[in-house]
Amino acid sequence: MNKKYSLYFRMLFSALGRRLSRMFIAVLAIAIGATVLLGMLTIYYDIPRQLGREMRSYGANMILVPSAETGNMAREDVEEALVLLPESKVVGAAPYRYEAMRINRQPITAVGTDFAQVKKTRPYWQIEGAWPQAEDEVLIGTDIAQYTRLKPGAVVTISGQTKERERFSAKMKIAGIVKTGGPEDGYVVMDIAALEMFMDTPDEVEVFELSIAAPAEELAVLEERIRQAVPAVTPRMVKRITQSETLVLSKLQALVYLVTIVMLFLTLICVATTMMSMVMERRKEIGLKKAIGAENRSIVIEFLGEGIVLGLVGGMIGSVFGWFFARQVSMSVFGRGISFEPLLVFATIAISLVVTIIACILPIRRAISIEPALVLRGE
Image 1 (tube, rainbow, N blue to C red):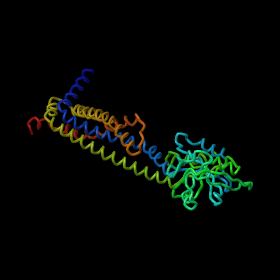
Image 2: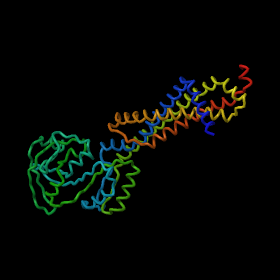
Image 3: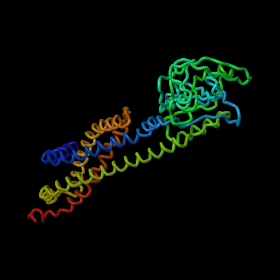
Image 4: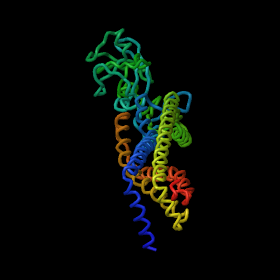
């Protein structure tokens, strides 16, 4: 039995070795197909994560609001809801609280928040000057800056009343001017700890914005989980963001499908053409084998073995280049690397083998249809 297999492999590699140029073309075609295949599979697998991170620059995709019609959320309820979210996918979580105050006796809406988290949930904010670094520093909206003619570095008086109607007044420094094109242009934004101190009602928020790197389906699951576990908090998806992310993701994945299918089809045609030309070159050899008693089964096994070798070699070479291809695409498009998935490499080699075997079907059928008598007579 060992001699039989040894003879088979010697015949197999001898046949491949005598036609190196054609083998090279076939392996090159399979390798190019495998390169694109692994690249597309890796990108397809990684697109939701990469796109989710990119879409976070457009703002939060979930908000938490009070379940009751009036009143604010207790911070402990918000913290209970946050525990239910996967920490690795939470890009940012910013609290917001709105109160009526005055700046240099001019009525304004003051917003308390966490500036470190705002940078993550609202990275589109344009700041003239600097972000506040202390509790006595604020941002003013560009509309307020225009009609008050205040600039970064100016000191203003923030005044108002607490919930108990006690008056307060404090000097605050303008660290910067915020411009968003939205309602923030008409607000004064300060650290939430300073606002809570002024209002004498700590640990309360009106809105909590969440930026989560997850697709719409997963967000819906998280939304329902919070709703069931924390009755005092109502989670809501920001549909403008989630729908846009879903639409872009579906179009990118459809493009990946199309490119992959086209490349596999072209690979199949190239391999089939190369194998067919090999069959035509070896007509006399095949006819002679059949004339001395070779069965069609042995002819099929021989050509199928050659195809499997080509598929394995091309698939492995393509997997190496495919990884670098996917990494380069990810760096160019998203500006960050990708994770290596061994399962995708095995899938690429397996698909390359399947495509090669399919490409061999027509040439093999042509080979077993050869009539020894006609071929040996030179017809």
